Image (cartoon, rainbow, N blue to C red; front, side, top):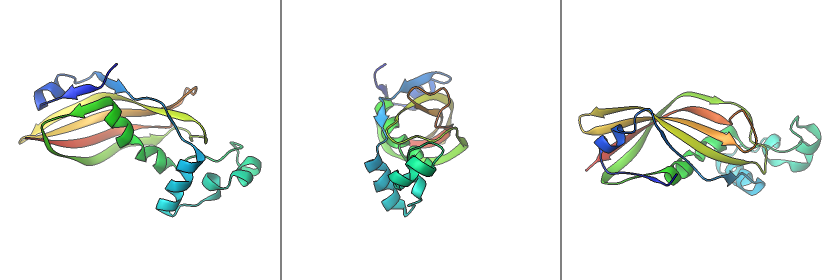
Length: 154
């Protein structure tokens, strides 16, 4: 499935209830985890201390921060959809967000999306996107929920 191109509210609305797309797989490596830890000041050993995690972690490895997994959403979302004719796009909120299982360092993740709901709010497109961040080879997802974006079309 190629990238979905959207040029208007009506085009977006025509996909209600449909899968919008699936991103490419992305490897979550220790370097990415360490940079996220530095940026957020969250240096808990389960994320950054490889040797200690091998011994003390129930996963026998470091794991990605849950919020790192969430922060991949915009990058992965941009692989699925291109919305044109915009003045701007704003993140509006998250609903029913649930971390299903940790992302073990070295795992690959991808985003699967579906258009959950869409409304025209006086010319502003409010799109609710069901999202699932899957872990390659795992039945249970890393993260799922509903992301709401506001698209201001020209």
